[in-house]
Image (cartoon, rainbow, N blue to C red; front, side):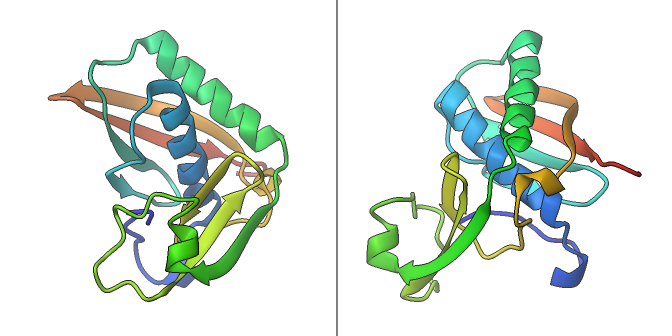
Length: 156
């Protein structure tokens, strides 16, 4: 289950930024073989995600992360959600971060054919609603990479 910490009410929660978190997570998995973010703080202006890696990524690798996330966004992928029994969800997503009190049905969110995970948060309907992803800065210490990022949106 996505481990996000929405600020304020669901009404204030930023759908483009949260959807971007999913894309970033899948990009990190594909590039580095790590798990999804273990700690995320998602807000409209800027957000952060922590990943656990064996070694520090290079600036070139992080530039490639930014490029790949933007390529996925540019594909205008449809974002869908479906409710399914937990045992069926376990066949397609990692449920290791699922809280103990989770029910017997889960909400599974898909971003085209790029990402799928259990998540309760709000998302855009299509990646065309996101904008441009930019890594602001990052640091690596004790195996933890912290990425800070924002979205550049049209008209903003």
